[in-house]
Image 1: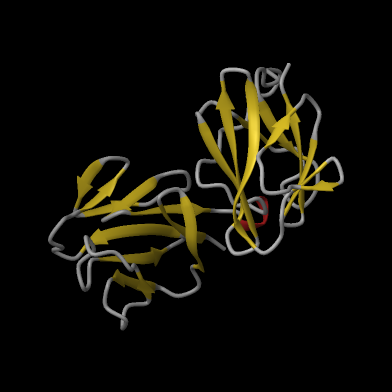
Image 2: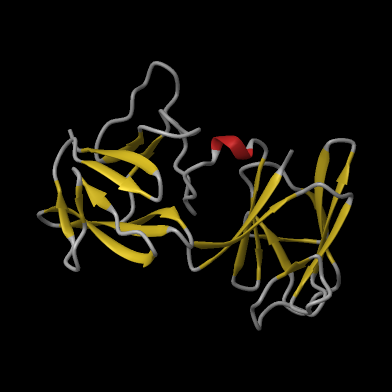
Length: 202
């Protein structure tokens, strides 16, 4: 069953299992999926499911609907594609059970036979066990919105982990993260919202 995630400023704010044939998206509260952003029209776009395919359609919105950076009228919405409506980014996931770790910029898995190199985090528990995310950005957000979200920030002298939001503080090597950022060392283990990660920097 496909799942839609909506993120604003790189933080997932909404998840929707696509179980019905048509959804309207917009700022008005009567829409199936409400997008709370002033750049979104009252009734902005629609998502339809047809013969196992997902389609995204612009409903003559003021600011347009963009698929992978290109304005569209009606287009096939495939897993891995990104739709931008106002400041809301929509992503389609074909296998929700593989997305236990909610991360707005899921890094592609390394090809078979080509293990990833460089700074990265690997998922050690949950449905996404074995998934690796390379730390290619200056700031990478990880975690589950509403539970525990943290950032891993690249600095000239290494990487640090900082709590951003949530009710559960990240735990590094068994010690809860205090107010100050924690410097990460190779093979440090991070517990974040019920998911265990390993920081690798080799």
